[in-house]
Image (cartoon, rainbow, N blue to C red; front, side, top):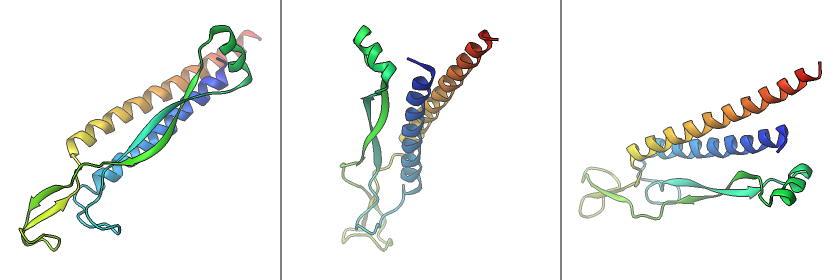
Length: 145
């Protein structure tokens, strides 16, 4: 893998983790939203990552020699959680049903915070990988002096 391929693969992971972080932020911000324009409570969203082949001329030649493919990360889709909403007893709430229960989003704040830590660490790891590839490219240029 050449330096630019390494940077492109890491940048695809940075983009995917940024999308994941945006979804986590949206989930946390709407943890108490009982009414949406679509009707009903907010539904938790999550990103689905897919490893797709990274096709460059050098990678194709390398793949023929090693029969392994370099893969990048893509967000293939954003899915809504299909679990039923959490029912909370609050008869004074304007969205309460006849029994006094309000349908609330099934967002678990602790789980979202743990996911946020994971996304942050993955993002930091990919930033480090980009910096390492850049450092290697600079050292290669210094050899030619």
